[in-house]
Length: 106
Image 1 (cartoon, rainbow, N blue to C red):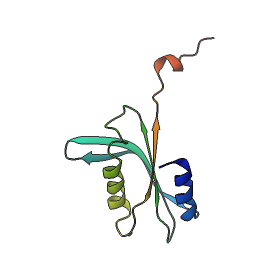
Image 2: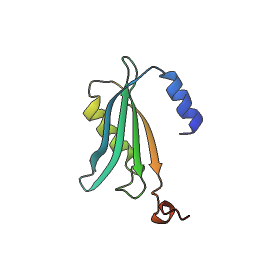
Image 3: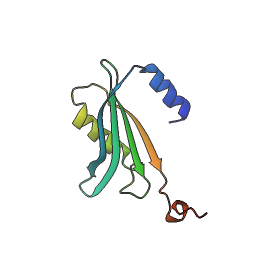
């Protein structure tokens, strides 16, 4: 999905939302074999689709990007079981900070 498509989707479901979940180690077992872990922030508003923001450092665990559908379904099942539509899913994949870039000389 392009940035323009994301903006259009969010605009269509625009509302002030409340953060109802902030799990730093949300874990999903995928196909009984793989396990992926990511930070989950979930925002909801009455009568609007929830918005799930999933953040993962690249290489942290099984790729969030590869298992996004299973992860989104698990978030929907655990947090929004009574809703007709799944949450709007936003992924953020962060590059790990290398040891060299953290050491500042000077």
